Amino acid sequence: MKYLIIGNSAAAVGAIEAIRSQDRTNPITVISDEPYLTYSRPLISYLLAGQVSQENMFYREKDFYEKNMVEARLGEKAISVDPESKSITLETGEKLFFNKLLVATGGTPIFPEVEGRDLGGVFTFTRWDDAERIMEFMARNRIEKAVVVGGGLIGLKAAEALVERGVKVTVVELADRTLSITFDHQAAAMVEGYLEERGVDITTDNTVSLIKGDNSKVEKVILKDQREVQCQLLIFAIGVRPNIDLVRGTSIRVNRGIVVNKYLETSVPDIYAAGDVAEAFDLVMGIDRPIPIWPSAYIQGTVAGYNMAGLPREYGGWFAMNSVEICGLPTISVGLTVPPEDGYEILEDHHPQELTYRKIVLKDDLVVGAIFIGRIDRAGIITGLIKDRVKVTSFREHLLREDFGLVWLPKEYRKHMVSGVGVEV
Image (cartoon, rainbow, N blue to C red):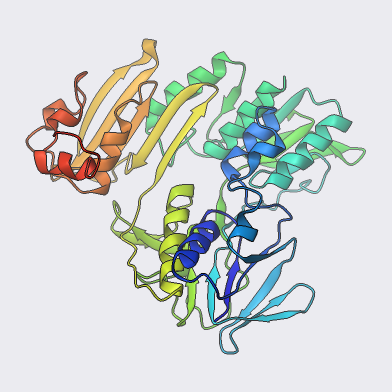
């Protein structure tokens, strides 16, 4: 039995740990086009800001591969998969054969075809190498102003890192607000005001239509509304798409991402997919779709790993969930935060002057989404109610009360939450 994993992030780690819990002997090989040991991708903005050292970037101990008897072939790129011969081809032309394969290739940053994008000082921002290249560029050049294209979480964390380094930042967002996928208008307005107070300029309903420079370096951008913004650094952070290139054109079924069943197996037996590249079940939306977040990637990798090792496990699904501080302001978004139609009930507690906002979205007495800004102390309980699909009929009026806690939850659910802890509930 030969296990082969393409990718080296959260899903790959989950798979390795699951496989080794069942099979301590058969070989596992990991192929990654990045040269680094497995690292925590959400930390790259903190690396850029100088708040995290390289030594603290790693997701597991440096002996993780050795302890788990993994052959880690780092800095080697897989370019194709041949399901019929059960092999993959590397960029060097070398072929590797497998009995069980996990495709955990993650996402590829969207980099629009804008004139001038090849100038020096233009970057994407999803990998460790991106942060390193930006830091190297900043060390060689005087950077006073930067533009970040994209007002999602990645873009705002990039903006925060640059502000921390003393750079004047302009954020350009195509939608009518920042964080449009995860936050409603009230939450976005609160975050935008908070950032503007810290010197960040934000322009929405706009995008970059032209990049201009001299001496092969960016000097300014022209926006859709014809405004010019001076900058010596430009970061595109407008999202990622599932990295399905190496399976495209094969018998492995793909839509936006790789299609998988409840065992995380693709349309081809013995080939699995997990993480940002997979279209797995969204508990809240009730559909299969990519959910590009760290926790679901690890869980999917774990489920795939168990199945690869012969222990049947079903993936019960997950949902969109982001917990991040933006310039020190704690924010959490979970599930469906902006309902698309009637039939939903909204509970809100909004105190702009105190920089706190709490919103809970209900449907049929089930919590399906939530936003927390400033005060996030009850977010874990609310997330559990979404995950476990707990009817809140008997305590819905308490959900946003100051004293809301475990005591308000149904007794049987409290027992479930603290099972095995030895707590009287």
